[in-house]
Structure formats: structure tokens, C-alpha cells
Image 1 (cartoon, rainbow, N blue to C red):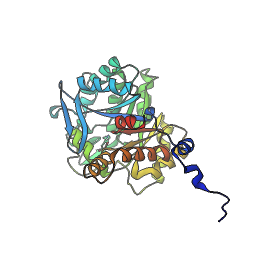
Image 2: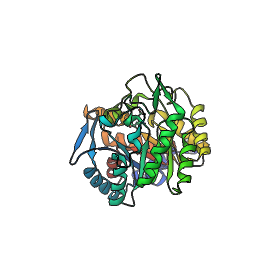
Image 3: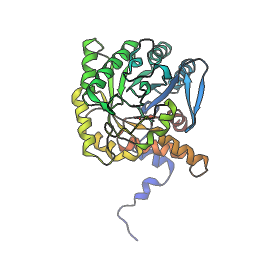
Image 4: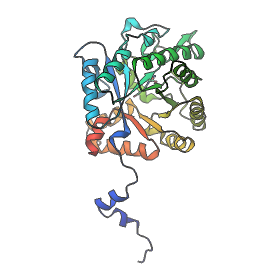
Length: 324
Ligand code: PBG
């Protein structure tokens, strides 16, 4: 048999494979999401996210130091608001002494080099568990945007590096950019959840923050997973409105979208490997049905290969250990 080209030559051994590997994960690829709780010395494992914890701020600060020393450059903060602070205005979200604001300050004080990103959406503060203000059973857009603007400004005042609006209201990126400009926060970035789908894969996250919607679902604001063109429309609008980084969420069931967006924009693209994606790997590994370590590295590599410049993942720490 004579073959002009034998593709297996480039797969012959580990050395050659590593020389021609097209996608290499590095610690700077990862954004580590952190769940923060009130109190001190509180560490609660999330039932549907085994091995992942909601920590009080003292423990969180130690964790951030550990993450930074491993080479992870960025954290994405989520807080669990106390029940008594929840209402239908979201006002706890811009309380200057709120848990989020205290967390931003404490983390930036302890590890100034860590890039601190903050979730912007009303769901942890909403009695309805929705990302916006509810009127007559509807999540109203424009009033919600006003709340998100106040929330973003208060995160900037507390010292965050990026606000990360995850709410999917229309027009919020332009409004947030404007308030940052007006208040001279010219170095605060916006990482927009531009193409965020209404996904069942957020289930475990809602356990972590006790933020499941009390009625209905999020399909009137988050995107229909049947759609691809719409993801481009949403993302291009956010670029136009002033986003610095755009995001696709979830990640693994949306690799085609990540690639489409990567080809369509000239900004860094991030992808959120969400709680349900974490839970699936953990559950299968626990059953002995998947090799957890291999599943983590293969999953994250595929997300980067699809076009993600940054990956928010609960496996950030594991991944750094596995690739080093
Ligand atoms: C809320 C928010 C969600 C996630 C990030 N921000 C949940 C939702 O939209 O219901 C999901 C993250 C994950 O599942 O890991 N605005």
C-alpha cells in the first residue's frame, strides 16, 4: 500500500502530539466563580455540586489567595442574600454595605492583582427569584435596567474590575456603560452575558444561591436554545453598546454558538461552563462511569477549541492542577 499522506505520523507519540496540539489550556484561561455567604467560618457544600462550596467572606479571601498563587487571574462573585433583604425592587443589590460590596473590597484589599468580576442581576435579591422586577406576573425591562445600573455603579464604587450583567434585559449594556462614564469609572469593564440561554443546566446554581424562580421560568428574557442567529444579534448589540468581553452560556451544549460568536466579533469571548455541566461530570465520576480528571480537561479544551478565550468554570482549580 502506498499512501501519499499518513496522518498518523503526527500522532505517533506524546512528544509529537504535544508539538502539534492546537489548543493548550493555561491558568489565565479560567475565571473561578465563587459563592459567598454571610457569617464567619461558614463553609457549606452545595448538595448538587459535590466538592464545591459556598463560603463566608473570611474563607473566600483565603481561597482567592490560593487561586491567585496557582495562576488563576480572575474570580466571578455571587452572593447569597439573606431572606429578609429580598424584595421586588432589588435594593439590597446596591446597598454600599451589602455582602457583595464588602466582598469586593475585602478581596481587592487582600489580593489587589486578582481581577474581580461581579454578577449583575436581581435574582439573589428578588423575592420571586427572577432576574428583574416583577409586575403583573411579568419581568419588566426598563425598570429593571435602572436597578441594574445602580447595582453596577455600586460594584464599581466598591472597587470591582468588571461588572458581569447576567440578566438578559434589553439595553442594559449601554445604560451601564453610560453610568460608569458619568461617574468617571473609566477603568471598569463590562463582561456581558450576551448569549445566555434559558437552560436546565443552571439548576444546581439555583440551589447554591437559593434563587430558583418562584413562578414560571426565565424564557421571556433568556434565549431559546433552538436559536443561533439570535445569539449573534444579541452579541453584536452588546458589542455596539460597549461590552468589553462577551459571553456564551452554557458552554458544552453551545459550542457551535461559541464558534459563531468568535467569528463574528473582535472582542474576547468567554464561555460559562455552568453548574449543571459540573454536576454531570461529578455524578458520572461518582458512579465510576467517567474518569473525572480526563472529562474535565477534555471538556475545557473543547470549549477553548470552539473559540472561548476565557472559561468560567467550577473546575478552575482542578484544571490548573491537572494541566501543570
Ligand atoms: C443569574 C445567574 C444564573 C447563573 C449565573 N447567573 C442562573 C440563572 O440565570 O438562573 C448560572 C450559573 C450556573 O449555572 O453555573 N442571573
